[in-house]
Image (cartoon, rainbow, N blue to C red; front, top):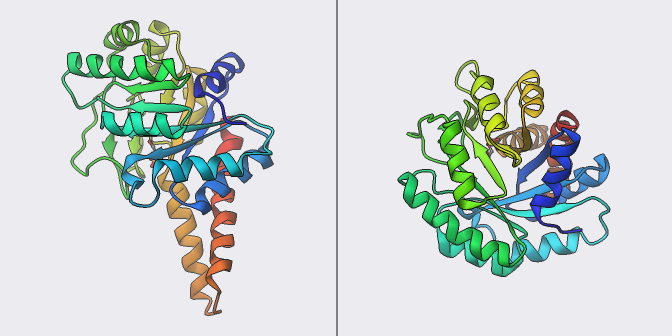
Length: 278
Ligand code: 13P
């Protein structure tokens, strides 16, 4: 069942749990994530970022997700991850995405507010939810998002309150020390900042950079308002490492078998995170 992400996160906020948002860019990742949701009996967010438009276009992503989630009992949202291009936001909405993230976090504040407002107006008129980000995540190891020069800018709680009041976004992504990719050293996650943001805002909060974040930190974040957790790098690196092991064993595989193995490995890592977020 494909639904607006706001609906999924409304229940997560009430129930004090988080919903995993996993990046998709191929048949195998879509099937692996949906099979995990079926197996764990938990709602899920499938996140497609504009950087993967070389792999699939919006219509193809929507078609596959719609077909593969036809008989699923849990709620599924198809979400546009980090998108700074307004045209692409509108294309995703037109293609049938049920949620979009407009990322104007690198723009001057007033410009970010103005652009986000435009997105909210269009998206809400189509029953599509909107996520935005304030602050900025640094780049870790093997990050496939952002730039290697990205630096940490923590979310300012009072600015976050002003931003949500002005734009009426449904979900806010916060920057509290997680990184896109794996951590270079010991993670320093600022739960103190998260607590202040949580106090100021009523809407569900999103945590990007889930890969490699220690389990106790994840639990602490969920206790303090995080309802959506994004995971990308670890699904890819786990699957690639397992495939490397398999191929190194020396047996010759047919490509169709490799496709099935990819789905199995994606499912293993996604289920691990789903259990943690419950
Ligand atoms: P990781 O690659 O660190 O898991 O981050 C994913 C993410 O935040 C997607 O937007």
